[in-house]
Amino acid sequence: MTRENDRFIPLTGRAEIANTLNADIFVSIHANSHPRISVNGTETYAHWDASKENWALAWYVQSEMIKRIGLSDKGLKAANFSVLRNTEMPAILVESGFLSNPTEERLLKSDSFQQKVAEGIVAGISRYYQEKKAN
Image (cartoon, rainbow, N blue to C red):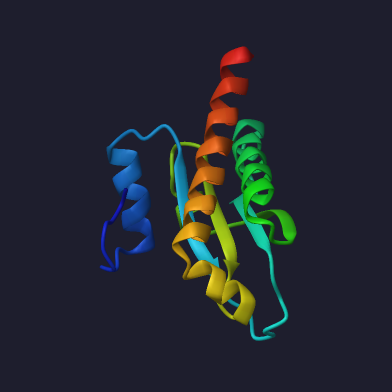
């Protein structure tokens, strides 16, 4: 965990923490926003230049979250976000839903929805390591 409260840590600082601790993977968890309130769904990002292994992590996490939370699957996306670019380990950024969408905002505030998101992320990470071990 890079933080356990609402204290801001610069984006490069988040990657530095993971790199210093020699983390095996980096998962950044977010809630999305969009000017149009009708936009909805869940998506997972990896760096545009990420390895196949990194994309596998993104795919497993995205697919396991979708199974549990029931939101629209916006799929995998490539980005050049600082936390993806500056980490030395496989890194993903999860957008669990849209705060700008009233229905998803209510879900994102719900303990049970947050639990389902967490369970999906954990299940995706587990699948990633199982597959990695098998190969």
